[in-house]
Length: 531
Image (cartoon, rainbow, N blue to C red; front, side):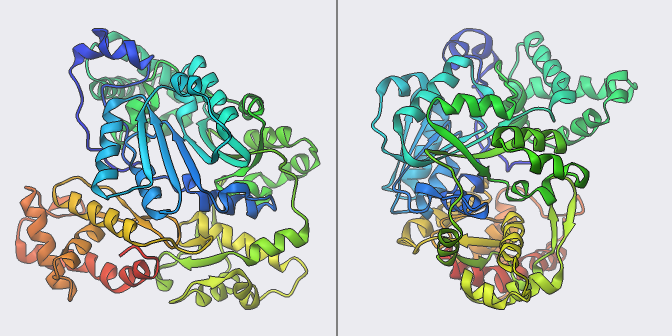
């Protein structure tokens, strides 16, 4: 589930009265998209994804210009600008509410390297360009716009991505969505039958679907995946669901289809930004691994992987120009330029990883030396190689495999290049904390060292607020400060879903949750330039 969003919605008459539909082109515009950060959009992550499969990271390794097409609320774009102060960031979105929100974040953090425009993709394509972009991000947007807008996106990429430029595209895909497509069609029918706000349409659709399931409708009996999907949707943010299911355009791309479209912009497939998906021993059932390995065509290989794992969402990395493997010497040299850092305390690392097919458990004898080498410091790849316990010929490949799973789990961060000016990130992070005092919660902070975002929880934000006010000497002091902030919002802390009404009972509960932040996370955040 994505983090909460904090936006207003317009009245129902705007949805069907013409004013929204005329400019939205069927895209949900009466309720804003969620405000979150997706690590796969970070150039550093894209560079590491390419290197993890022996491909060149291209211009994501040292980017200078970055564009996000369809940036939503703009939180992720602003965070990346704060974490990468030496990179120029642009954002295009046709929703004026999104643009206004993004500009408030940019101005609030004093970010001089970010700008956003209220512009359609068709207008952007008509402007032209001159191969000036190093990285372009497309988070989900291709799935939700019509063919004309899709063609305009490809044209923008053709005009503006320079040779060795990197494009990130995430999108809903087949075959995983096949049994779930009727849920979307049902929700769209509810939208067309009820002229009300999008969040209300979502609630109505979920209620009706729930009644069908509870009454043992044969669709759910025949499709257990649909029942599981409905159960997940009932717990998810309504604004997210509106943008996921209620757009008039909703394309489910087979990988080969999208790859063919992007080929018109001279873009070739590099890797998945979901790191374990690049390794068949994680991404493909064992019995199918030989079939995938035998395919000499990269497009067919990805198609086989999608069917083997029943994939329904892809996070793809494309590059302009050749994506041939690097030589072993080139690959080794580039790996030597990488550094790594812990994102969580050493004693909190969990060697359980979510894979494309199942949960996986790492061997402590392999991961332990890597993690120990990262305690209290940022270590180079060669240092980790020296500490790695294996002596087999493929030991470096095994080390890279372990690092990919640690990065995928969010417990280790790849670090590429020197850190930029830390002040923009610190201004951005202080702004995030100040917003939390007002009840607007964003759950990521910017790291100028790792050049990406660090996910945080609500207790962490209250701990940082206490630290800003000089009230974080110990967990109890910080807890009393946090409780005052929580109460000022008209709220109470909750334990196991039950509100704690007694302040003297609430303080130790909050202290127990804030202590790990003060003792374990804050030192790591200081190392990463977050605080």
